Image 1 (cartoon, rainbow, N blue to C red):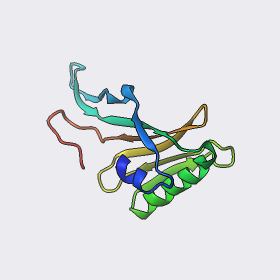
Image 2 (image 1 turned 45 degrees about the vertical axis):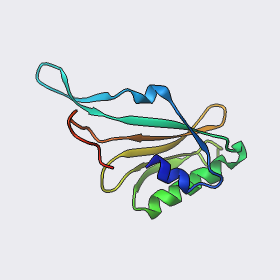
Image 3 (image 1 turned 90 degrees about the vertical axis):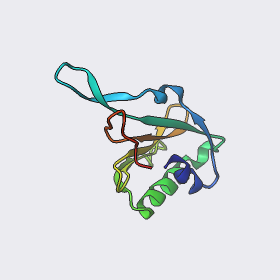
Length: 123
């Protein structure tokens, strides 16, 4: 999903994995409080993009996600130069986001639905 989104961008960024995004997060627990289901996250910095293209990149992402059928949940910050686009992928229910951070940096993120350890996330 991340790579598909990047292919819709002009110019194309270089993806840099944000290491702390590799940790799975408990999202459901058994009656003893032991995690039994998890979400899987991936976040990537979008590198080698001109900062003055951040708004254009965010607009491209929103357009691409809408075109492929994802549900845009929120978008904003365009007038302030701090764009953010949040969506839910259809039909598999991933949360996907393009977010602005201090220093005029953008990152893409995807979070899976809540899964049991033996389940395979939707492709």
